[in-house]
Image (cartoon, rainbow, N blue to C red; front, side, top):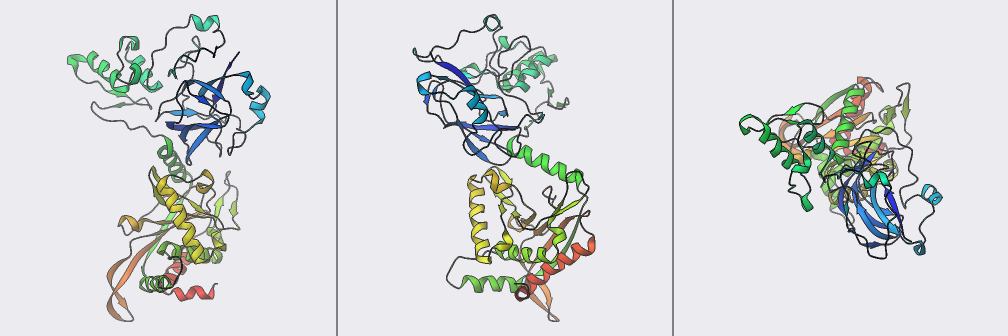
Length: 444
């Protein structure tokens, strides 16, 4: 007799507490094989496909695209035939999913769980899974008596919408959902709330922090990568006493060097690659800046390798891919790795490993057509070099006014790891290498 097995979202690495459903790769009623990917989710680090360790018939799915599923919450249920050789209960604990490792214990994350019981008295999912009757050959175990008398749960797009209805006294069973298969959407509840307001005027809609949004305002939820970025930037701003210094630089000679290098056969060298090479040399001279403060704030961890992060705009927002051991790469190798990671960021193909472990960040915001910035440090890193657009400007060169290619460099640093003298020395060295790139030969 087939056994219905529940597959829950595993810890996908880095101690993540949840992931957002991007798209389902299987349908309810579909027969799947062991380790077949069933859903694509977006974690705090990247978009990944999640394989299911069971083979059989998919009987239910939990979570719609855009909803977040907590680690340990159900993803799918599968009717497994003993003939297929389903994993034993002990194997479920010991056997990690391919590429993700063994899930860690719950760390107390506060993210909501899709498919969690609606109330303690009625163990029925709050957001009903998509389900169809299994084939005749699949016989699910008999439901316990408590489930047989449980109240019918109305399908609602999210727990937040269910809570909004509860706070306004809206009977969900009396609503007709406008979503797929009668799913009650947020707009359905808002219309019911508006109908209760005096004169039919739209009422304020509660948001997650207990405040209310004005009528007609849109509340855009922070989730997935956007929420992760927000949380990390907030932590950085709260914990790191950052300071910024900057300098205008004549980049004419650096641009001339780039044109000279690209005139010879081989891979093209980008401005970012040249700046990355300058940064690795500068960090060798000022190792205090290739560091981070320990978690408890009691010490400074100086890194032996330069894992160079750089800001890149992906299809799902800003990401910071990391070039491992950048100090060991030639300028041409740096350029090739930067180009590869940039393309992966553009297509959303970066792996979690390529987005973690940075020790220093290079931020080329000049691509947005701006001259300067005071960026927030990429926690827990201690420093970031920012580069503005390179543009022709009047400049005093060798005592005469001339038109030169000028950029602005800004340097943001954690004031706990060094003082202004060290930060200024680093920035001045970088600026001198941009203005006179031949200086690098002394360091290589």
